[in-house]
Amino acid sequence: MFGRIAPWYDFLNHCLSLGQDVYWRSRLVRAARSGVGQGLFLDLAAGTLDVSRKLARACPEARIMALDLALPMLSVGRSKKLGQGLAQRVWPVQADGRSLPLPDGCVDAATMAFGIRNILPRPQAYSEILRVLRPGGRLCVLEFGTARRRVWKGLYNLYLDRALPLVGRLVSGDPGAYRYLAETIASFPDERALGRELIDAGFSRAYYLPMLSGIVFLHVAEKAGA
Image (tube, rainbow, N blue to C red; front, side):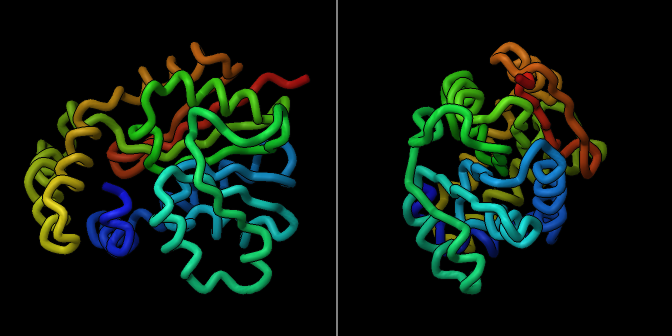
Protein backbone atom coordinates (compact mmCIF):
# COMPACT_ATOMS: atom_id res chain seq x y z
CA MET A 1 0.00 0.00 0.00
CA PHE A 2 2.75 2.47 0.90
CA GLY A 3 4.54 1.56 -2.28
CA ARG A 4 1.45 2.45 -4.32
CA ILE A 5 1.08 5.93 -2.80
CA ALA A 6 4.82 6.74 -2.63
CA PRO A 7 4.78 9.20 -5.60
CA TRP A 8 2.02 11.26 -3.92
CA TYR A 9 3.10 10.84 -0.31
CA ASP A 10 4.91 14.15 0.24
CA PHE A 11 2.32 16.22 -1.61
CA LEU A 12 -0.57 14.72 0.33
CA ASN A 13 1.25 15.12 3.66
CA HIS A 14 1.64 18.84 3.02
CA CYS A 15 -1.82 19.25 1.55
CA LEU A 16 -3.80 17.31 4.18
CA SER A 17 -1.97 18.94 7.11
CA LEU A 18 -2.07 22.44 5.55
CA GLY A 19 1.71 22.49 5.75
CA GLN A 20 1.84 21.80 9.48
CA ASP A 21 3.74 18.54 8.95
CA VAL A 22 6.90 20.52 8.12
CA TYR A 23 6.80 22.17 11.55
CA TRP A 24 6.01 18.88 13.32
CA ARG A 25 9.03 17.19 11.78
CA SER A 26 11.23 20.13 12.73
CA ARG A 27 10.14 19.70 16.36
CA LEU A 28 10.95 16.00 16.13
CA VAL A 29 14.47 16.73 14.88
CA ARG A 30 15.02 19.33 17.59
CA ALA A 31 14.08 16.79 20.27
CA ALA A 32 16.40 14.16 18.81
CA ARG A 33 19.30 16.63 18.63
CA SER A 34 19.06 17.49 22.33
CA GLY A 35 19.90 13.93 23.37
CA VAL A 36 23.31 12.49 24.25
CA GLY A 37 25.72 12.38 21.30
CA GLN A 38 25.09 13.17 17.63
CA GLY A 39 27.22 10.62 15.80
CA LEU A 40 24.65 8.18 14.45
CA PHE A 41 20.90 8.69 14.14
CA LEU A 42 18.39 6.00 13.29
CA ASP A 43 15.37 7.27 11.35
CA LEU A 44 12.76 4.52 11.42
CA ALA A 45 9.80 4.42 9.03
CA ALA A 46 11.92 6.94 7.14
CA GLY A 47 9.59 7.00 4.13
CA THR A 48 10.69 9.62 1.62
CA LEU A 49 13.55 10.80 3.88
CA ASP A 50 12.10 14.14 5.02
CA VAL A 51 13.20 13.62 8.65
CA SER A 52 16.53 12.11 7.59
CA ARG A 53 17.34 15.19 5.51
CA LYS A 54 16.40 17.52 8.35
CA LEU A 55 18.64 15.58 10.73
CA ALA A 56 21.54 15.74 8.26
CA ARG A 57 21.15 19.49 7.86
CA ALA A 58 20.79 20.12 11.60
CA CYS A 59 23.77 17.93 12.57
CA PRO A 60 26.55 18.44 10.00
CA GLU A 61 28.80 15.74 11.48
CA ALA A 62 26.14 13.07 11.96
CA ARG A 63 25.32 10.00 9.90
CA ILE A 64 21.71 8.92 9.48
CA MET A 65 20.52 5.37 8.93
CA ALA A 66 17.14 5.74 7.17
CA LEU A 67 15.20 2.49 7.51
CA ASP A 68 11.82 1.65 5.99
CA LEU A 69 10.05 -1.54 5.00
CA ALA A 70 8.61 0.05 1.83
CA LEU A 71 11.37 0.21 -0.78
CA PRO A 72 9.38 2.49 -3.16
CA MET A 73 9.17 5.13 -0.42
CA LEU A 74 12.94 5.10 0.03
CA SER A 75 13.39 5.24 -3.76
CA VAL A 76 11.29 8.41 -3.94
CA GLY A 77 13.40 9.87 -1.13
CA ARG A 78 16.65 9.04 -2.90
CA SER A 79 15.40 10.72 -6.07
CA LYS A 80 15.22 14.07 -4.27
CA LYS A 81 18.13 16.44 -4.65
CA LEU A 82 19.86 15.91 -1.32
CA GLY A 83 23.11 17.61 -2.24
CA GLN A 84 26.41 15.75 -2.31
CA GLY A 85 27.20 16.30 1.36
CA LEU A 86 23.80 15.11 2.58
CA ALA A 87 23.66 12.14 0.23
CA GLN A 88 26.90 10.79 1.65
CA ARG A 89 25.57 10.93 5.23
CA VAL A 90 22.02 9.61 4.70
CA TRP A 91 21.97 5.86 4.17
CA PRO A 92 18.58 4.43 3.06
CA VAL A 93 18.10 0.77 3.94
CA GLN A 94 15.05 -1.47 3.48
CA ALA A 95 14.50 -3.11 6.86
CA ASP A 96 11.85 -4.22 9.35
CA GLY A 97 11.61 -2.14 12.52
CA ARG A 98 11.05 -5.34 14.50
CA SER A 99 14.43 -6.77 13.44
CA LEU A 100 17.00 -4.02 13.01
CA PRO A 101 20.21 -4.85 11.07
CA LEU A 102 22.38 -3.01 13.59
CA PRO A 103 24.67 -4.03 16.48
CA ASP A 104 23.82 -3.35 20.11
CA GLY A 105 24.33 0.14 21.53
CA CYS A 106 25.44 1.89 18.35
CA VAL A 107 22.79 4.62 17.92
CA ASP A 108 22.70 8.00 19.70
CA ALA A 109 19.04 8.73 18.97
CA ALA A 110 16.16 7.23 17.02
CA THR A 111 13.29 9.04 15.33
CA MET A 112 10.00 7.87 13.91
CA ALA A 113 7.46 10.14 12.21
CA PHE A 114 3.95 8.72 11.84
CA GLY A 115 5.22 5.16 11.64
CA ILE A 116 4.65 3.44 14.98
CA ARG A 117 0.96 2.89 14.13
CA ASN A 118 2.06 0.65 11.27
CA ILE A 119 4.29 -1.67 13.32
CA LEU A 120 2.69 -4.58 15.15
CA PRO A 121 3.41 -5.81 17.70
CA ARG A 122 4.81 -2.50 18.96
CA PRO A 123 6.70 -4.01 21.95
CA GLN A 124 8.87 -5.93 19.50
CA ALA A 125 9.91 -2.65 17.85
CA TYR A 126 10.51 -0.97 21.23
CA SER A 127 12.74 -3.86 22.28
CA GLU A 128 14.84 -3.55 19.13
CA ILE A 129 15.15 0.22 19.48
CA LEU A 130 16.28 -0.15 23.09
CA ARG A 131 18.83 -2.74 22.00
CA VAL A 132 20.51 -0.50 19.42
CA LEU A 133 20.38 2.72 21.46
CA ARG A 134 23.42 3.74 23.45
CA PRO A 135 22.95 4.30 27.21
CA GLY A 136 21.32 7.70 27.64
CA GLY A 137 20.04 7.66 24.05
CA ARG A 138 16.51 8.63 23.21
CA LEU A 139 13.64 7.67 20.97
CA CYS A 140 11.56 10.55 19.55
CA VAL A 141 8.21 9.61 18.05
CA LEU A 142 5.85 11.87 16.14
CA GLU A 143 2.35 10.44 15.98
CA PHE A 144 -1.30 11.40 15.74
CA GLY A 145 -3.36 11.40 18.88
CA THR A 146 -6.31 9.08 19.10
CA ALA A 147 -9.36 10.17 17.13
CA ARG A 148 -11.65 8.76 19.81
CA ARG A 149 -11.39 12.15 21.55
CA ARG A 150 -13.38 14.98 20.01
CA VAL A 151 -11.18 17.86 18.81
CA TRP A 152 -12.46 21.29 17.77
CA LYS A 153 -16.00 20.23 18.71
CA GLY A 154 -15.78 17.22 16.42
CA LEU A 155 -14.68 19.14 13.32
CA TYR A 156 -11.33 17.35 13.19
CA ASN A 157 -13.02 13.98 13.63
CA LEU A 158 -15.34 14.73 10.70
CA TYR A 159 -12.37 15.82 8.59
CA LEU A 160 -10.51 12.63 9.47
CA ASP A 161 -13.47 10.37 8.72
CA ARG A 162 -14.77 12.03 5.54
CA ALA A 163 -12.46 14.60 3.95
CA LEU A 164 -9.10 12.90 4.39
CA PRO A 165 -10.03 9.61 2.63
CA LEU A 166 -11.80 11.52 -0.14
CA VAL A 167 -8.88 13.84 -0.92
CA GLY A 168 -6.40 10.97 -0.61
CA ARG A 169 -8.42 8.88 -3.06
CA LEU A 170 -8.85 11.70 -5.59
CA VAL A 171 -5.16 12.61 -5.62
CA SER A 172 -3.46 9.23 -5.24
CA GLY A 173 -6.11 7.09 -6.92
CA ASP A 174 -5.88 4.62 -4.03
CA PRO A 175 -9.23 4.33 -2.21
CA GLY A 176 -7.90 2.14 0.59
CA ALA A 177 -4.73 3.91 1.66
CA TYR A 178 -6.19 7.01 3.30
CA ARG A 179 -9.14 5.08 4.70
CA TYR A 180 -6.48 2.94 6.36
CA LEU A 181 -4.87 6.10 7.75
CA ALA A 182 -8.13 7.29 9.31
CA GLU A 183 -8.88 3.85 10.77
CA THR A 184 -5.44 3.41 12.34
CA ILE A 185 -5.60 6.86 13.92
CA ALA A 186 -9.03 6.06 15.34
CA SER A 187 -7.85 2.79 16.87
CA PHE A 188 -4.47 4.04 18.14
CA PRO A 189 -3.83 4.34 21.91
CA ASP A 190 -4.02 7.82 23.41
CA GLU A 191 -0.90 9.67 24.50
CA ARG A 192 -1.00 8.38 28.08
CA ALA A 193 -1.36 4.77 27.00
CA LEU A 194 1.51 5.12 24.53
CA GLY A 195 3.67 6.62 27.26
CA ARG A 196 2.92 3.63 29.49
CA GLU A 197 3.83 1.30 26.63
CA LEU A 198 7.25 2.92 26.37
CA ILE A 199 7.92 2.65 30.11
CA ASP A 200 6.69 -0.94 30.18
CA ALA A 201 9.05 -1.70 27.28
CA GLY A 202 12.03 -0.67 29.41
CA PHE A 203 12.64 3.01 28.75
CA SER A 204 13.64 4.78 31.96
CA ARG A 205 11.71 7.98 31.24
CA ALA A 206 8.99 9.03 28.80
CA TYR A 207 7.03 12.21 28.23
CA TYR A 208 4.93 13.78 25.50
CA LEU A 209 4.16 17.22 24.08
CA PRO A 210 0.81 17.99 22.39
CA MET A 211 0.65 20.00 19.18
CA LEU A 212 -2.31 21.45 17.31
CA SER A 213 -4.81 20.85 20.13
CA GLY A 214 -3.63 17.29 20.62
CA ILE A 215 -4.11 16.20 17.02
CA VAL A 216 -0.39 15.33 17.01
CA PHE A 217 1.94 14.39 19.86
CA LEU A 218 5.70 14.35 20.16
CA HIS A 219 6.75 11.46 22.42
CA VAL A 220 10.27 11.30 23.86
CA ALA A 221 11.55 8.19 25.64
CA GLU A 222 15.03 7.78 27.12
CA LYS A 223 17.15 4.71 27.70
CA ALA A 224 18.82 4.50 31.12
CA GLY A 225 22.39 5.76 31.23
CA ALA A 226 25.40 3.58 31.93
